[in-house]
Every structure is written in C-alpha cells, then in structure tokens.
Length: 438
Image (cartoon, rainbow, N blue to C red; front, side):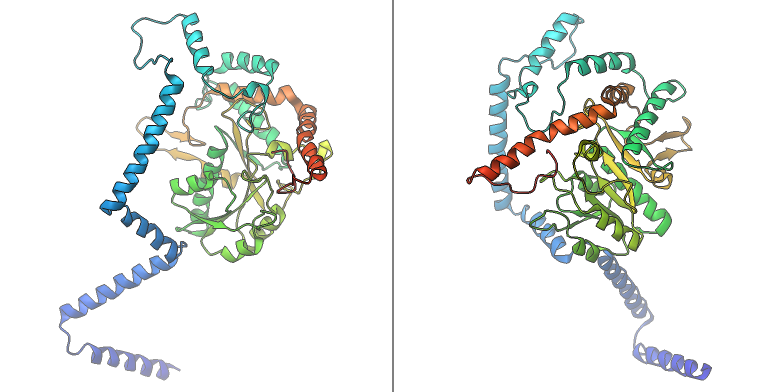
C-alpha cells in the first residue's frame, strides 16, 4: 500500500515538474495565485443561493438605468408622479397652516387641541363608523378612555431602565406570558414585546441568523418563505444580510407548496416560515407539514400570526375549526402575533415568542466594553415608552378571555353572510374558502 502511494506521489510530482519546467519562477507564482483566486471566486458563486439568472437580471437593469435614454425616460415618469403627488397634497392641505419651526411663545392647551383636531379631520374615510377594511380593528369609547388614563400615568416610563421602572417590566412580562399561554407555550416559552409586526419579524430574522452562525457555523444564511409571506421578512433579510428565498404557493389553495419548500432546503437554510394567516389572501399555510420539515432537517420554524394570531387562538373556543398553528405543533420554534390588530390594543404593540430562551438569546444586542457602561437592548429600540406597553396590558385585561371569544364570534358573522350570499347569487362567487374574517 505504501509503495502504491509513493509511486502515485512520484508520478504526480514528476508531471507537475514537467509541466512547469520551462516556466520562470514568477510565472509559476502568478499562475498559482490566479488559480487560487479563481477557485475562491467560483466557490463564493457556488455558495450564493440566488440563481445566476436572477443576479444577471438585477445587474442588467442596474446597468440599463445608467444608459442616458433610459435614465431620462425614467426621470420623466418620476417627475410626473412627483407633480401628481404634489398637486394632490396641495389641494388636500391648501387651507392647512404649517408649523415648520418652533413657535416663539408657548401655545395654549386649547390652541394645541384645536390644531390637532384640524389635522385629524383631514382624512376622507369615516373609519369610526366602520367604513374601512383593515387599519382599524377596534372602536370602543370606554376602552379609549381607559387606555388614555393608563397612558397618562405611564407615558414617560422606559423599560430600558428596569431599576427605575420595575413595574413596567413586570407588565411587559405579563403580556408575554399571557400570549405564550394563548399559543400553548411551555414553561420555557419566552419572548419580547415589540413596536409592531414588522419589528417582531425582523427580530426573528436577526435571532435565527445569529443562532445559525453560533451553532452551525452558517455564514451564508438563507430563509425559506412563501411568496405570500409578509415583506417584513424581506426587510429583515436585507437588514441582516440574509438571503430570502421565496417558495411558490399552490395556485388553488394559495398555501405554500410543501414539496417545493423541501426541495429548496440547503445546508445554509436557517429558518422555514409559514403564515397563519397570510396578508394577501387570508389563507393559512400547512404549519404541521412545515414543522415536520423543520424536525426532519433540524431547522427552526417560524409561524407568522401577526394578522390573525388573536383570532386563531380563540377560534376553537368560539366554535370554529382552525388548523394547528402554534406551539402545540412539534417543531414550531417561534410565533409573531400583533396585539394591536385583533388584540385591539393601541397601535405600536406586538409580541415575538420563542419556544426556548436559546433562540431569544440571539435576538439581544449587548456591548460590554462601552466607556459609559454595559449597553443592552432586547429588540431594535433602546428606549421605549412604557405607555404603549401598559396600554396593551390594560387592553388585554379589559377584554379578558371571554371578551375575545365573544369578539371572535362576532367577527365571523360578515364572512358567513358573504358565504351564504354567494351561494344564492349566480353573479357572485367566493375566490377562496373563507377561513378567517379578514
């Protein structure tokens, strides 16, 4: 065996020496360096998940925009849009006075409130009467009075300073634990209160990127998500240099194609995403199947329930069927859910929940050697108003479990009317089976 290896090495070295016998030393160095650089570049190209076609298309359009004729045409069209926007804005605000610099003298409370009311009257939608889809999820005068009083007491508190405002931190912990229990979490389930669904999703992207690098050494991370997933995932991936690979959905059910998702999994995949429900159609991905893929390939699974999380949690108790989409599904490692949608809290409130602290740990940001002391924050923001946290907490207590069940039953009445109406009207049909009242 040793003789075979020796003869093979001798043959190899002889071949190399013969190949370079007429080369100058500098030429050998140049060829070697060029070969190493080429192989390194080729490996980097191979490691990139984005296809050559996709990258080529982006490069083509980027270069095309630099062509004088094309850039001039684009600028002309943009000028038209700017002019239209300016005209619309001027017409709508022509009787509105601006305050572009600090007034020399203080305004009275009456003057301030009058100005505020004028700004609030600028909108054309009668949203307080219910004539709007989305954006507004609750109109309750008693609740507004309550959260107004709560906010007055807590508006200047800041959970960044737990020694100064320990009560706000306890309130935040209450929200997280209430949400964790609603989504069938365990004793290990933990999370953070964020400013909205986008921040919850972005924080999940950051946490899983850092978790994958720390535990698996992945430096070219990829997140697999349905084409119907919220663009906040694309934002988080752009922020944290993660490649967002979109997976097609079934053209009939609009659920993510599980086979396509499995085929897209690679050694760089750090997260699988499913929506429960998604924003474009209100359909729910097969979370059980996605979680099974996560267990099979040892990949975390995130369920985005920002839109309907506070519906799906109460649907079984309101008499409606819903597919499993929370921590009761083995393999689900995190959930994002907006309290400021069907949780009816004031805008600026959401939760990101993790099945275990090992994931949340990588969401945090800490600087230990700053001259000003240790700096740490659990989410994107440093300072946060305790007012919104307290208002969210107060809203959850105001409704209580039974209140949310009652609200869920009421919310399902319009879809039921649409369903029965479409069955009787030949000119009307349902594009999709209405699973949620969205």
